[in-house]
Image (tube, rainbow, N blue to C red; front, side, top):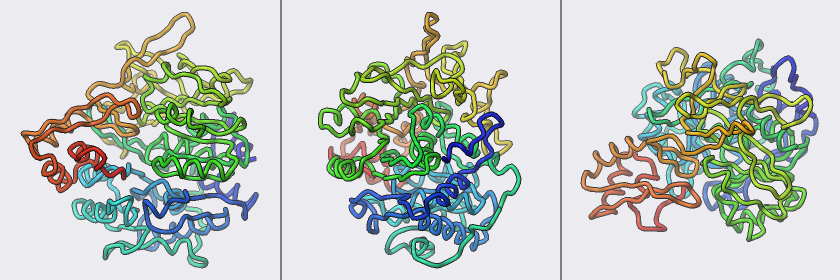
Length: 507
């Protein structure tokens, strides 16, 4: 069993590539990665299904291609891909090449990309020709033009612009193999593996995590959810955030099973995927569950449902779901950390404990994955094995990512302590932040963006039952404002606020 290779007492010494290779050795011909059947409706190429042997070859081919262009060890390679097999192969290929993966949200455009990748000194971008109607290859080209350190762009899909190196041949038989390479023979698990980007009231912050921290986040899900070896998993959460890595990539690597991917949310496709496979685990945004439960889309009696709460202040108001015996609620606090809790059968969500959180909760020999506390100003503090240790790159001036004397990081979420049972209730999210599904935007940045593009227009954040909040724009000529914002490379959520309802591209 994959989990047996992790020494909880002495500490984690395993890398993500080690986890993948162990699964491949155990059953090389077993299915490893499966695309959604509607892949061609949102990106190029037929839906892929890869065995562990085929995935191993593709990962090595991506790694070899990156190294062949002279990218050095520890180079930061950004990724902007939909929730497909390509994204998993690219992520692991970057790690196998000895580099650092930096997955970014799919809704980011040039402005966000330049700001974030400039902060971490990215040397390359892996992208796709299109996601929906958006030409992400063009976004990567414009980003590289604005950032001198970005010297190479790699892509999946048809008709890539000149200058972008295709990676589609990574899935063809033959080619280069780096399976015997050992880029970091010593303490490899302690090296930075991935960077995600958090947003708080003071701006965007690169959050770097090593293999140990990523595995700790994954163990919070696997152990609390009781996910067994060789599990069949279906995930709708892309790997563009720490929560995505912890809920989608890590349970698959730790269980050594089969990962089925679903991009966005398309009910008919999701229903077809669910009906075609007897899943042990399904991972979904918690906001989607109230609509899915009455439609009978939440799986069978043996399925564990992992519900991601991007707005953790709403979790305790959730109602039980009938005929779903196992629900693991996962509260995500930006890019700082997650807290997982398994409900009782058909019961409500559990409160967040104050203090050490070990998984599985209440079990002998449980593993500590995170620790909570309440600050003197009433905000939630986190520390522990999955929480990032410092700002990135090393030596960066990021005082808001500096821990206090006890090693805690402040999430900015206001919380209340119940001294009778030592639990914490999340009251409100951080101030000056607009949270839309899995995306966070600073109100100050929204105002500045609009001041530059259309000073006479207005943009407000409105409550939204499914997404937490949504943006609504008003202007004399909405179409012109949307076009100006797109030309300036503004986030798609901002420009989309000035489109007619139903006209915004979900990609």
